[in-house]
Length: 197
Image (cartoon, rainbow, N blue to C red; front, side):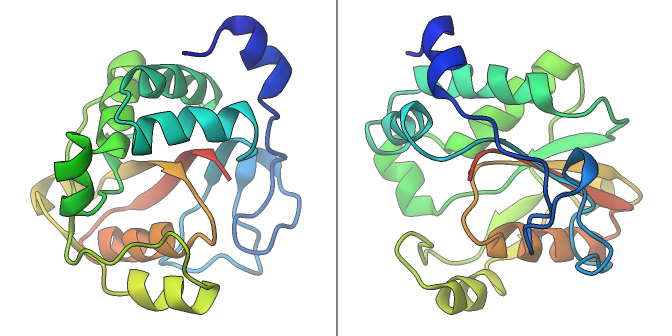
């Protein structure tokens, strides 16, 4: 769905920075001022959400074209730091999105990245309600995300260095909420990788 020439020419890499405040950091680390126990240590962002990246995500999410996800997974897998993760998981989407699309796009990405990196994949989060984040204000997104997830497969969470995968990040509310749930369930650390922002 996206040739190598378009990949090189149209996808604009995202600058390494703190996901919360935007301050430039090394290796997408959360800056000291924003770092709290329940926040991810690093949030690696692949590209800017515009142009070809936006079209690729849109084709996958709204046209049910899985082919784009394999290209996204390949791009994302190549930029995730070589860190010793215990397991890879995904940020689950709503059940009605899965029914209409036929798949959970973040789960497909996480499984592909796990296979490419030869790491175990496990679903560690369950989505509790069907509220969508698209179109919400920052405060609405934060409120919705605060109670959106619960931990599952807790034995796989405890003591784990988790890599959480999602396709697009806007405010970071969902990944912050999910990270808190995983840390509270016993994860030792949580890093996040998203394709676009």
